[in-house]
Figure: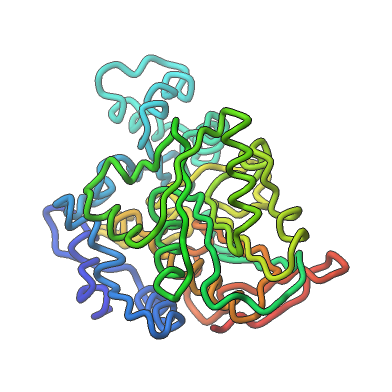
Length: 370
């Protein structure tokens, strides 16, 4: 675990009044393996994993995420993570708890969680769109699935990447593909700019350095037409939306991949595109879902790092995207944040991903070393 400390992650892991700590092996080793799959890019793990917290001045807070929006709560039969990162999440608490929450929503939620089964509490939260997870519930979720949905072809030396993602995981993937030689165009909705813009400017600027930027109005026919025109020219799409959200804008991965050989679609979601509920997730709750937590001295869980499923997912998505680029594309790269966290935390050996859709629509097993 020496690497965990060297990368600055231990300062973000553990109780606020206790020593810095780390999750059990093989977490640091798995992260090192991911970094090794990005040869020639000279990725600084401390910069990727801990810089955002450093820029904010955040430190470890135990069962409160370093950014303060997510908490580990003891339920009647286990632990859950609930993330109130958006004003709407707080506004939905009365509906979640069927009670008034007053001026201290966390106190009310903590008390209510203690009397409720973990799965019931998380299930109701997710139905309302509040990011929440049962600790360790997604340990077996595949981190990544590749689906062969188009024809492979020789990829350009500088493919055009259309980055429709936001926040951290998707933009990090785009950043790394850009460093590998791709041209990146970031697209934002004029009504919903990337939330990372509201954090430290240095963090946003580093992720998007050298990228072109386009702002369109997705609510208008003209904006959707502009998006379609950009997508028609792209070789790679990176997005972090629910499939149905992009479908409403006229973008469907399967159709886009089939329309032209050699394309790559990188989809980043909390639990994978096949998740029946299309559950929402952010980095801290996704990490808890995958079981990527450390332990306090009394054995109770504490958060690891800063929204750690986000940068880990960005690293894996970039590595898988580069592998698809080398193979000629024609693939949908389906990355699940909770699955990535589960793979990093899981004991033993195993590939990043093991399923590829063949032409008949079945799934065949494939080793996924980089």
